[in-house]
Amino acid sequence: MVNVWSYEGRRCVVSGGGGAGMGAAAVRELVDLGAEVHVLDLKEPPVPVASYQSPDLRDPDATAAAMANIDGDLHALFNCAGLPGHPFPDLDTMLVNFAAARHLSELCAPRMPAGSAIVSIASTAGAAYLQNIAKWMPLVETAGFDGAKAWCEANPQAINSGYAPSKEALITWTLHAAHDFAQRGVRLNCISPGPTDSPMMSAFEDFAGAQLIDLFARGLGRRSTPEEQAYACIFLNSPAASYVNGENLVTDGGTMGGLTTGRITLDLET
Picture 1 (spheres, rainbow, N blue to C red):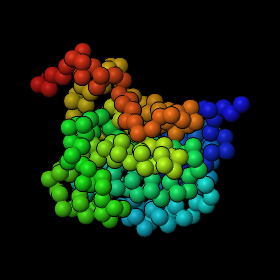
Picture 2 (picture 1 turned 90 degrees about the vertical axis):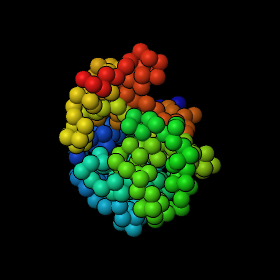
Picture 3 (picture 1 turned 30 degrees about the horizontal axis):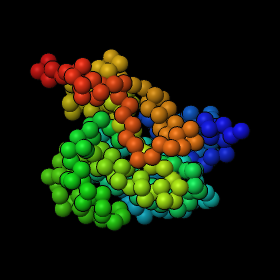
Picture 4 (picture 1 turned 60 degrees about the vertical axis):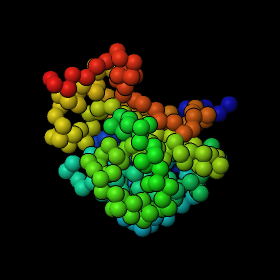
């Protein structure tokens, strides 16, 4: 009987798999699970992998060239690369967090046999996507990386602040595009972490302050670890999640659920 939790013999691409964040945690776990791992990141992966390349994800040709260097079938793509918004330009944040993730998914899908899967890391910062689906559909329906870039350049107010808009767009695209990917037998999902103690957190604290960030970690009373978010991604891309498609899995310790039902309230004055 096939072990649905196993990654033995599965070939995985992890974008953002270098350094010490969620992608790096996924790389460590995937290697331990027996996967053949290929990493795309500006930082080196935390453990030895099958291949490592450092393309600039804002350059679609560089990403395509990197993928051309990885031959054969692919069974899982992990879109873990991201920018935190400030201090990066809004356009760069949208390109890395949304356009590059979509571009890489579209590059990988034709090489993925039925039963393969793609997961992207969104954020609870994008929770307003439900109110903004009509706003993001014109971006979601653009063609290719260049189409997304042109839309973002033409709509600076829509992408103002960068991070939350990029995650709203990523979630909306995931829910919308999952049907198309499913026609190939490829599942498409995302997770929405709450505050996580990753290297990116220092940028969020500099911009918003640690006290405000921790208000959104009240579900379990603490921030998550990169490993806890990686486990959710690895589950979604495994055969164990074979009937999970087009989902935005909120991995915030229950904070959003508490806010939605009134069990948690935010005192933004403190």
